[in-house]
Length: 302
Image (cartoon, rainbow, N blue to C red; front, side, top):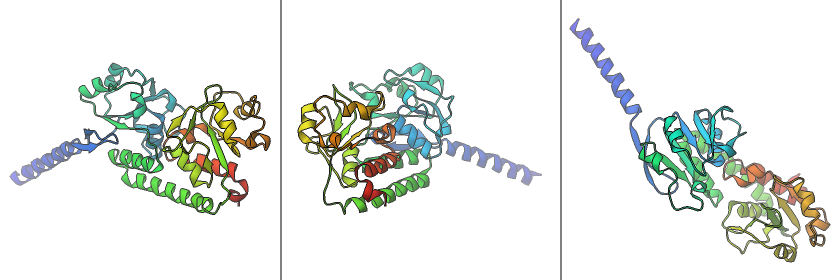
């Protein structure tokens, strides 16, 4: 009888030990360089940016999201009824009430301010990790791997990154054979306040991978060029990611003074999916393929 009681007691102790160890915190360094203590098991997540939401969904843990930003609406793999919030001014009280295990935040949440918008949340004992908006494809790989590690989906993260590299290598192989590089203008914001990209952006890398040349490759990061600078550069191809004006392709073609640009004269103005081209996630592959086929249809339709 004593032996049975002893065995039962040992089982209870072991179960208690396992339960405690499963909730044990672990120390991680987020993508911004902050050291954060997070739970070993994460079941309830707040995602504050569509890029983070897409990565979580791609890892198969979109069902663990209990609150997300409004721009994440429509992302596949996430509960449609999940709470949505404007994270430009996060409601700390509402987030704390959800009792999340972690908040996965974005560098965009700090835009225009040096203050941490989630300080009151971390002060309440809820860990907050930051994923700055990556400027390179390599940075995107690291974002995916980091998020995969904290949700215990390392192998899935490795698989996603491996598939991305494989797809990029296929396109890059063709791009390297192209000698006559077309000049490309990428439009992210329409006239009169144009918005485009220079170097040190993953979009510029994508232009180079397909075998083309960004007309603003000598400028850095995200830029606001003048219409005159685009006209003077005379791009062979114009790619627009603008999805909030009616028929953005026709809008570009009808601009006064743009009629003599090669891309306009030769009807080489194309729309590229806005979400996959603007969010630093595994889905940039979709935009990369669209860019390749639009710019070099003969080379990439083989």
